[in-house]
Structure formats: structure tokens, C-alpha cells
Length: 249
Image (cartoon, rainbow, N blue to C red):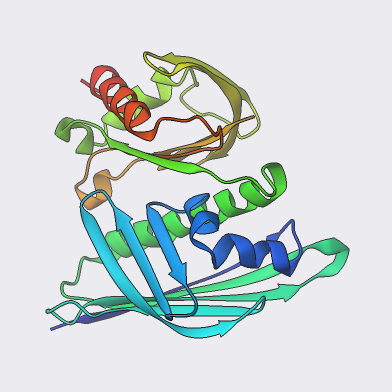
């Protein structure tokens, strides 16, 4: 039996529709604010996605640049699938309004807390999209992912991470952040996003994202977007993996 879900969000973005379209309807654009690696082939009407060992392929169902983009993943054998739609409208002052819809079916009923976490995740990603458009216009990022040890699936692990970032127990958006990661060097920027489940740090060359996932029974994870052209994704991932294992042990 499959279980239907819908997540709908609306955000004001600091860029005109053409820039928003580039960010949500091209592979390099999506990679610069969302997780994983994307390929958008409008001619073949396909979207390909990979993160870690997971891969999927989707059919583009609507392609109306720069206003409407939608695609639907190929259903899994159990009938589960995801479908995404982006509706972009021009707003005053060179800004845009984006209406985002994530619809689909899951093979299991994961419960209310899981779906709430799913919705919170989209709040963070759409905020990151806004940061991309405001602070990194025209730039492309490489995505780095790593996960903490299994023990970090406990709620007690998140305060450890917050302290490792040099932040107080109740951090506030806009405050400065400085810490160091072996193999990466000093990270110095501002806290651009904070909730009980997420922390986001913006530097001149990166958007660092930290995810608390104990409600889903999963360890803490990172999903960083590196705008420096010489970033070595594999080495960065290894360095962050080692840092997570050290500070969350």
C-alpha cells in the first residue's frame, strides 16, 4: 500500500524570473542549492539525479521557461515516486515569487514526525536557494556530502555539533562563526540559517549546511555547496567525514 504526500511552499526570491529559472531548471543551478548531482535534458525531457549511491531518473512533464518547470520520477517497483513543480512569477523590484510543490507516494507510512521533517528540509533548501541568488549570482557550486557516526542519530548529538561550530546553545542568525576543519582550514562566515534541526553558514565561497535527523532515526549529515572553482569534492568530503566522526564521537 502506498501513502500519498504533498509539500507546498511559496517564497519571495531576490532575483528576476530568468535567474530563478536558471537556478531551478538547470543541472548546475540545482546543484548549487539542493543536494546531489542533477542533469536536466530538456530535449530528451529527462532529469537525472544522484546522491551518494542513490540514483533516479525522471520525466519532464512541463517545460515553460522561465515560468513553469515540472518533472516526475520513474516509479519504483513498490509504486513510490516523487514529482516536483516550480512556478515562477515576476514581482516588484526585480524579485520573483516561487511556488514549489513536491508530490508523491511512499511505500511506507513514515509517520507525522517524518513528514514534518521533510517539510522543514524544504524550508532550509529554499532558503539556500535565496542565499544563492542574493550572494552568489551567476556562480556554480560543487556539492559535498558526509554523515556523522551512527551514534549521532541521538538527539544528544546536535548540541555537540553546535558547540563544535563555536556557537552558543541558542544561536541567532546573523552572528559570526569561526571554526577549523583539518584538511579544509578555517571556516569563517555568518550563521545565515538556524533552527533546532538545521544550521547554515555562509562564507564568501561556500554555503555550509548541517542537518539534525534524529527524528528520522538517521545520523547528523552535512550537505555543503562550494563555490571555489578549485574545490576537490572527494578530499573535502573525506575531511568533513573525519571532522564529524571526531566532534560527534
